[in-house]
Image (cartoon, rainbow, N blue to C red; front, side):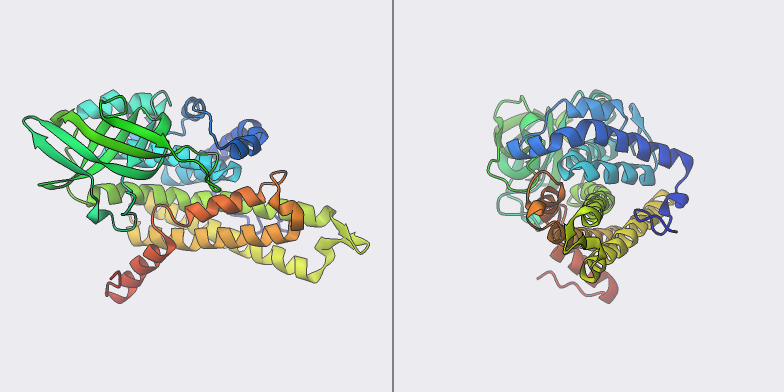
Length: 386
């Protein structure tokens, strides 16, 4: 009889090292995250020391090579994202921003000096990074960003504001993208630089176990050595976002799995009309539909991961994965919530927390509408963004 949590025996498609990574991260989430996440979510915080703990496990920049980064496969990285988000999207977002945005930007576009200065400490979780691209008025259209960097002698002077920045208020460095006379450029900005400030965003009802900030740069003066020399134009930040989106394709399946598992166990133990509600046809329909999309989404993530490891994954295929898996994970969370009834809206169970988090994941790293249009252009050859 197939396993209710692995109906298609996807586990058999993983190798021993991938299963070991899965089991290691799953144990960390079980022992460290799950006992505390309800409180962190309710209080709207994430302890900074989580960074060192993730670093000790080799999960920060784990798919990067050299500079004390593990050099793991794309599939291994995806598996880690899935297990972290089964705990909470805030924890997975921390690792994604650190490794796939801030560290990846330095690793791909930075100078050798920048790599040696920052990457080893970031891999250990001793230095925390954030990624400043989104602005108050420009999210889906970063090409129109208002943050500017102008030359002043041998220095650069940056002015602007970035919004919705994960890790911003406790970061040691920010990767800031700005408009210059030569096009869009990236800069490594130590957060103790004069003129830089990060303001914590309060009153969130989603991703509460995550530090989200506004970055303000007022006459921030940096030497030319702070510029990412390999980044020229919008392709730089978009390449970083594609790395983060790949992790999301996997991560949301972790949140979906948590919701499905919770609803399944609840339905088997919750008795109404003298029998478990799992014995009712309507409840079984909900559970089966959740399982179908969970297993299909996990297979999709694995397929894209294998393609990435083989060097043949196109960014539009990552958009395909994010569009499908986030949409289906959110539908699973909502369906699971309905099975738990009123219990589904309390933090005694993980479902409402995952559901609220997924509302943010649906939007960040490219909204579902943007990814739909990316795929639409890929299959028709016709852009429809304006």
